[in-house]
Image (cartoon, rainbow, N blue to C red; front, side):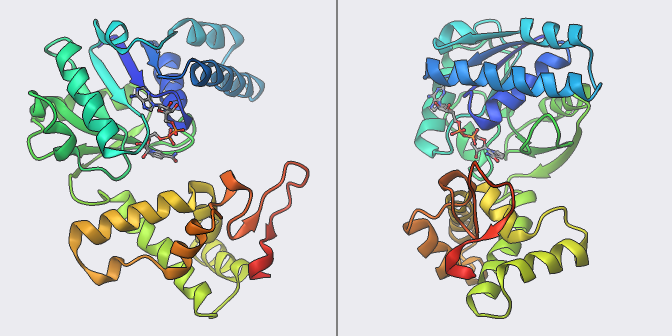
Length: 295
Ligand code: NAI
């Protein structure tokens, strides 16, 4: 396994390209937007410099990593010699089904097709291809160069050889791959999102304030970040859409999203990316301030 293609050069795609390239793989990074590709290369460069500064890698390693990455806007050209393709495009079922149909039509016959989706069924994605045994979930965590876990998701038809290859490749990236089956939210989000949702309900019912809820979970459970701050970091729209996947997938009322979460997304208070969620975010101040609605 040598040639990797990464589809989508956003937050996750640039991180995935970074770790593969740093571990000696040749990476073709693809996006429909040339602007996104340019930004991705800048982000990778900045993150590699940070690793040089922390003496985690040498400057020559940084240069080799950058040389291993080629950017493309033409997907067919970028995947023609790929051994493994990791799709990290926008979290939208139609977008992913179209991409996988095209990957299946143009990638070499033995190429494995992986998705970094956080909530869409791998079995569903695989149904857009004629090679469902070779379709698998490779769920990296954000930020990819830092986080150790790869949640490896077996779709209904994923075969053992594909799973073993992906477990071995993840280890070559110095990650810890963990195998799970394809059910709504997989393992990571099935457990994380109801916890975040419960924190939002706890706030909504007035049991405690934003800082108090986060402090209990940080200091009491040794979580590096409280659930409300984490929700802001992930994006409240993403949290809501994953709760909807759990609610639709299991049909169990325990997965109903908090009405406060729904309201905040409707009001475009999406967390860090919109400047306000449970906390306020500004360029000028690094101090975490509770948003006016909750203070
Ligand atoms: P993003 O919005 O930052 O990037 C998505 C990129 O895909 C954009 O640059 C967009 O131009 C590109 N794109 C859209 N359609 C395309 C197509 N047809 N061909 C090529 N490129 C296309 O999204 P982000 O956050 O990087 O998420 C990507 C995937 O990773 C999603 O499936 C998401 O659920 C998953 N994920 C996200 C995490 C996060 O913390 N952001 C964590 C784990 C998984």
